[in-house]
Length: 420
Image 1 (cartoon, one colour):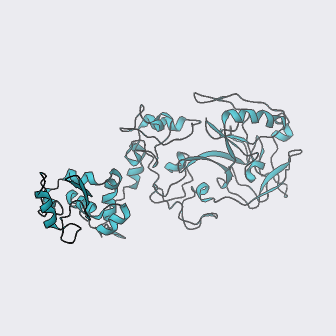
Image 2 (image 1 turned 90 degrees about the vertical axis):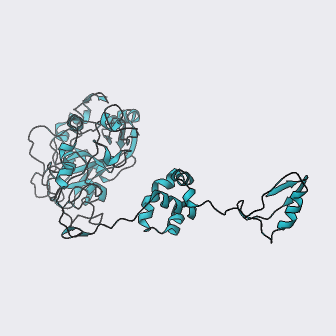
Image 3 (image 1 turned 30 degrees about the vertical axis):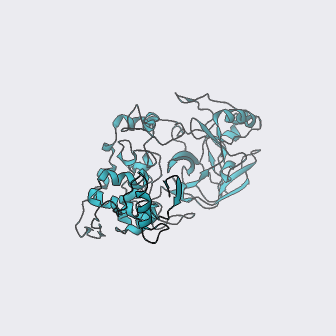
């Protein structure tokens, strides 16, 4: 700090701008007073208060000392560290005194912890309201109908807007999505997907997640036990069977020469599959619809197809990057089917057994080339490529070594999915 007296600059060693002058500084108090008396300037050398008293501090002053981020997390940090101001200041990166003043002015108190016991909360049996929370009556009926009727969606982006979710402000509502935990309003939204309250396998439409083509989320689903068993192997302890994509609970697959003449490689299952079993995820390079059209014309000339419509904006191409599922061939009487599932905010493609499949059988699914897509988001006419005109190739169904057909008996039309 510099003080100019009679055009002379004298350096004062002060540890704080509010600290009083002390006798052990460069200029003793008497010398400063003598200098001041000889000049027209007047300096009050009396000892000022080191800090303003807390009683003179207003709540607005305390609030203004912390950044908005620090103020927003202060209450949660206060509970985490049980009121330890030193640990709070260290975690928040703030001055200890400022944190202490903020806690005092906002009158934070520690609440009694909630103890979960077999008898309920704090020994009191609590009414099970899981089914009421996840009930469909909580959703807007018209929004729910739009979600159910949508055949294909645009790419999902969490909504970010001011005010509650409605048709005008919320992109999730407009695009026939449920709001998720990634959206700005989260569980406060009327359109927020609340998960399920199942106590079974979550593999029928009685499960809200399964019916909405979503995987069970352990953050939302309250009783099914989703994602509680270790990944990369079948679930044994948990009851939920609707977490196979996220936990990678796929079947053991083999690649060998296809039983279809001139079809190249084929996909086989090593072990027997039951109806509805998860086979594997269809993965690949995510490209735009425009690039998919260009590549599709090339693939049609080569009598092969690796394109899968994931949304109205993006397509999965497994030709260069993929896994074993790319070798699954087409059949108009398939033993597997595909389904686009929402997993933690992302659209992912799963291959599932359409019926019971014997071990070492070749797996097929319907490419749906002959079914067009025509809606407000995307228009794709039906196509009739050369290799589908061959009845031996188009209607081929795998036969295991025992000579018994492993294909499913056809009952009506196949469930439509989006294959480019």
